[in-house]
Image (cartoon, rainbow, N blue to C red; front, top):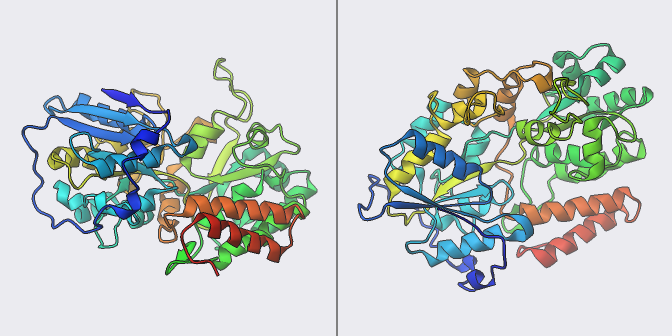
Length: 459
């Protein structure tokens, strides 16, 4: 059974505010058991991605014996979190047994206000420490999914470590080659700074190209390469690397190194087709950006045998800094009556490295049969034995780059307030680069916005 909720949630939200509920205590552990009278597993998600995975598990495990009751609430207009919060607080037979959280708000459920609802994976019957080590799960994913007591309560299936995704034809025109090792050196891949990147930007400008589409392409790398998060000891903290984004963004704009687009808007997509104000070298992002965004916006209509637009004119190399962008984590309710069954599903999604596990099928594009979309997954072991060659990347094996990219990513600089604070910071930076505010005024405006919207100390 599946429910889709996309209407007003006032009645549901009236159950109460989540912040005051949940004891935030760690489970004492023990063998996972199932209540024999319960034959339904309630799943809450914001897209059908995880529910479809769970259905695959059910289909391939005919003796599983549970009905899956799925509720999908989109994140649009902020609907998902209030609905999930209310369902967790209400408890009872309709409460989620399995629920999902994306990178923008996962800290709330793994480490923050709602972490008291999450069951440690160990309490689901999973030998989690051994499984993480054996699967070579990316450290950042584990860091994010570990609660304040040191228990792993959430893991992902998809790895979202970032790389630099570049146009082969542009690289050839400017540097005479599209070889990933050469492009990596040209942009300072692995250097830990942006010095060489701006040297490359000047060389590209001399030939009439931009290096990226807009400053948002740089932001995600800057954001997740910072040493500290937005909140430290309950106070707003502007990490020096994030503050430096003011200067990096202004340098890009003042020198005409990009097309000054905003991510997720029309101009950004036009640059993926090579149809922007000037052609650009590339974008920073993980595998999902390639598969689910660039692939759909590269100008290839997928209806003809001949590939069109910029399809096949791409490659990837290491970013100047390690970062991740996005992802979905899977959690279980500590009050679930079917923890053993829930543990079987979650282990299959997040830790199974066999060729019948979710991650192997996800990496090789075989979840729904041969020829599907390949993706970077949480397990390094799975990617090492999988075929990551992609036509979109001119036949390059993307796992050669994404396996180390996932290892370079840092999961210790997130907070549960990132979605709100990041938005305020991006707005302030745009006002600064547009000349509407001075640097000091932009920082002051940012602090004022955060003070109004987030319950933390702002000095």
